[in-house]
Length: 134
Image 1 (cartoon, rainbow, N blue to C red):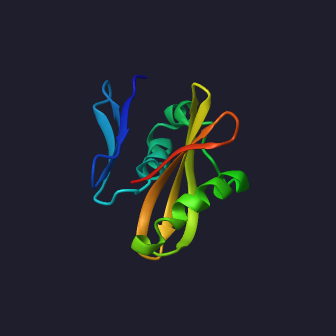
Image 2: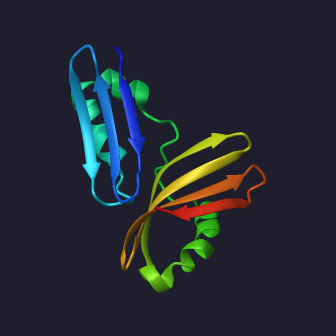
């Protein structure tokens, strides 16, 4: 079974899709809100129609809880956004990926004034090496 997919966050919206070319079947999630967890919408639909592909595609890197050490690294950066977005109401882990001695963590952060996706790059020695909101 051949599956092609694309996820991305162009400025101002989020897109995620899975395409099964031989079946002429596609699953697409579009949101006009930066920070929307499109993959969280795609995964259950993929599991409903293609359980084998969903199991094979399930990221072992899916975080299930906010890691305290990552939250401690994120807090100073999120505090800099308080004037524009208000205080942090909730953080939900989305996923993480490791490459070349660092790990990028992605969290959905709910502020009083809106929701954003926070990206935090942590080096192998546990120090924050980059942060941005989208």
